[in-house]
Image 1 (cartoon, rainbow, N blue to C red):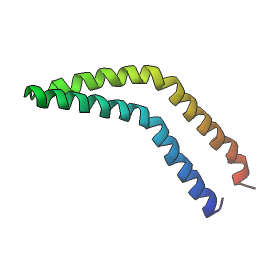
Image 2 (image 1 turned 180 degrees about the horizontal axis):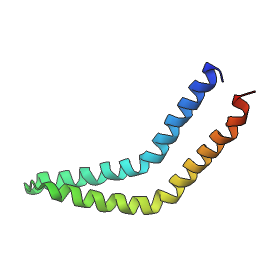
Image 3 (image 1 turned 30 degrees about the horizontal axis):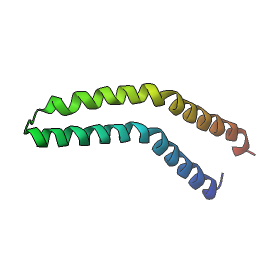
Length: 89
């Protein structure tokens, strides 16, 4: 395995990590922004008011996107394991 293959594998790994994390992080960002606007408008500064809706929204997002995320990761790991025999030749 040469340096180019290692760099390609690292780049692909980072891209897979971004793709898998993006839906949950996007939902958390959107809900956090909405709750922050609501808190600023009503002057309610309660910590749990921002945490509980974010947690609920992320659970729903995980239920919606979880199958897709697992499929992406399984496909990636399958491709990595298929490369293993070629490393030692």
